Length: 79
Image (cartoon, rainbow, N blue to C red; front, side, top):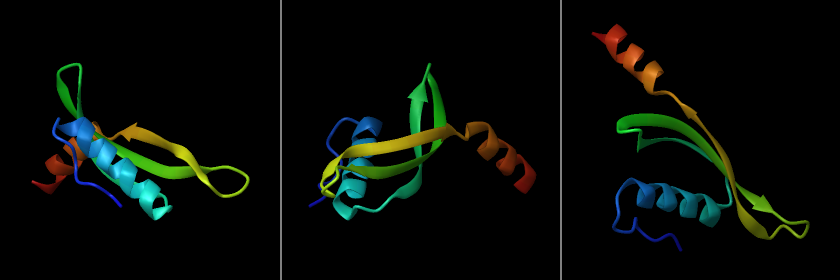
């Protein structure tokens, strides 16, 4: 069962997405935002489950790419 985000802001939303991936067992790619060095950043994250030899979920693996500038340029071009 996937629980809703806990109180506590963005990190709770990241955790909620992590729990969704673990519950579904399927990889997901999503946009997530966070504050880094006082600046709001947008990340394209891909997350999937890490399984042992028996197929049991052992944890979560993932990667993130900062797409803040790409999104800003896309907004400028749309104007």
